[in-house]
Image (cartoon, rainbow, N blue to C red; front, side, top):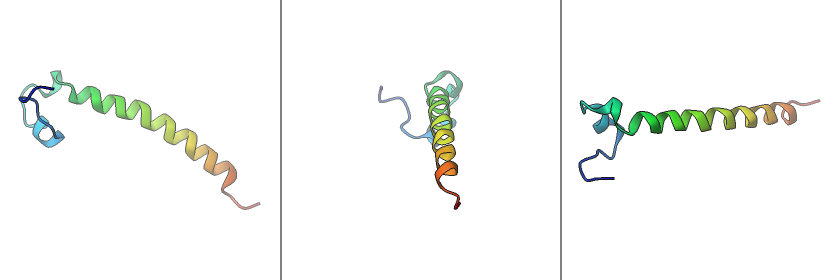
Amino acid sequence: MTWDEPLHLAAALRRRDYLVSSWPWRALAYVATTVPIAGVLSVGLLIIGPPC
């Protein structure tokens, strides 16, 4: 990372080159990894969580 790149999302959004920077890819990677993991964990909790 160079010193010219913003460190926070708020600063990145104010830049003209936001869409060609690494920030949208970071968000896509976060969603692509978090949503499936959260889905698997929630199904596991639904199976063992409710009282019989």
